[in-house]
Length: 90
Image (cartoon, rainbow, N blue to C red; front, side, top):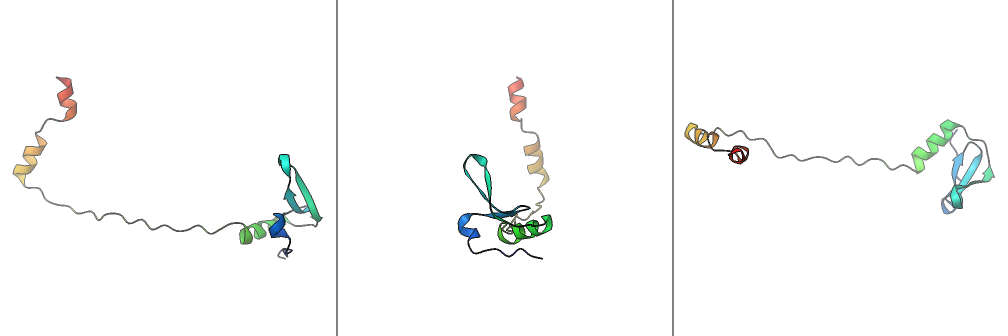
């Protein structure tokens, strides 16, 4: 059975626990403002409906891969150029 949420819950910032409707107080204390018995399944269902927003799916747009054939003279020229690491060794 689903938990019926009272109208005052949103303004009070209350949430259901196994002991009833609870609010957070200063210094990390919690206070039960209305006693009730809720099961763990009912509490999980309530948090799923009211507290959690659905995740937004983000579509990634990657650049298309284009393979270009390099002419042999160009490949030979660039493959024989010294690299930065070989220049530092001298």
